[in-house]
Length: 168
Ligand code: SF4
Image (cartoon, rainbow, N blue to C red; front, side):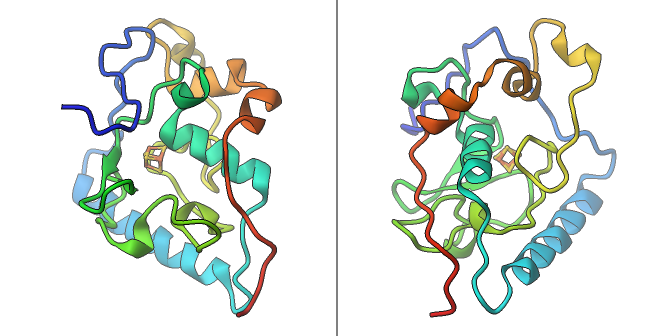
């Protein structure tokens, strides 16, 4: 059944990406610590990431098929039990309002944190790591595709709401 997120499991161009850690439990603890660090980065003035970086994060998580592109959503993107919301199933933070990747309008969402780690170290995140040459072999990784095929014009098509930092 479709979760209406544009996910295309039959897309043979992209390889499946598992989180590369022998000890998944330890990795989840680390990701929780990373999220705590992200919360600190929000600061007392509700600092937010810049618009282009948020668009890049949205591309990493959601892909760009809804904008007519060919990048499917991340396989760790999970639909929330709340209709229309999504969370990262790879970081262990669970499904709640504070962990939704994108919230309503200008509400603070997870992808707004200035410092935010991704379990796959995807572009736009604080722990981003450039793809290695093997990721260019077909099926390619989504990370390789973003680095080599996604243009700034593609990113500009991704609708993202972001407002100036405020402490209200
Ligand atoms: S944070 Fe990383 S692993 Fe999680 S959904 Fe986004 S791109 Fe995928």
